[in-house]
Length: 278
Image 1 (cartoon, rainbow, N blue to C red):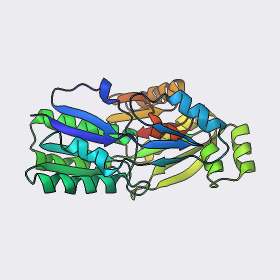
Image 2: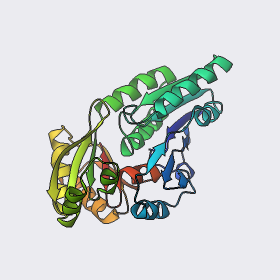
Image 3: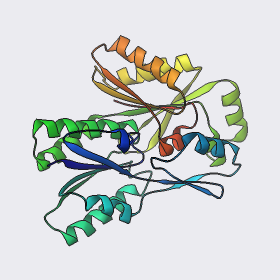
Image 4: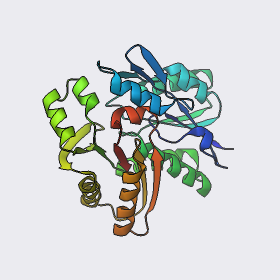
C-alpha cells in the first residue's frame, strides 16, 4: 500500500510530474491575490503571468493558505497520510491541515495522519518528500517514519538570495529609496529560515557571483558536508546552475536538484531569487 504524501503548494514539486512506486504525491494550493486578480497555485498556474502582474501592480499583493476542506479531500483518499506544510510561523496552512486531520479522524479513527511543520518552505519540503519516499522503500512502518521525518526536518536548513525587493517595498518592509538603490547597485539580500521557522535577512552582497559564493559559505558555516540539496529558482536557471556547480566543486558526492519555483515561492523569492534546501 502506497503512502499518501500531501504538501501545500509551497513545495516546488509538481504532482503531475512526480512518479513513485511507493508514495502518492499531491498538493493543495495557496491563492495569490494581485490587485483584483486571484491566482490559484495549481498545475495550471502560469508563473510568468503571475510575476508580470505582481511587477506591474502598485499595491501590495497577498496570499491565502489552503482551507481545511482542501486538506480533508486529500486525507480521505488513503489510510496513511503524511502532510507537510510551509512554516507555521508565516502561514495558517498547518492550522488548516490540523483541523482537517481532526475531521478525518472523527469520521474514521483507524486512519493514520501525520502533519509535519517544515518550519521552512520550497526546497526543504522537496527534500522531505524525497526522504519519505526513501523510508517507504526501506519498508519503515508509519509511526517510525513520522519520527524519522521530524528528525530529518530538524536537521535540514534553508537559505535564500533575493535580487528583487518589490514585495518588501510594497508591503512597507523596505523604504522605496533603499529598495531602488539596492536594485540599481545589483545588491542581493542573503538570508535563512530560522530554527523557529521565521525569515531572517543575514546580510547583503553585490552581484550574482558573490551571492553564489555567499550561499556556499553559509552552507559550510551550517555544517553541510555533502548530501542532498534542492535549489529552487524564480526565472533564474543560469545562477541556480552556477550554484549547483559550486556546491559540487566543494562537496563532490552531493546530489543537487534544480527546480523552478511554483507560484507561492515565486511570490516570496520574486524574479531572479533563489531558495536552497540542504
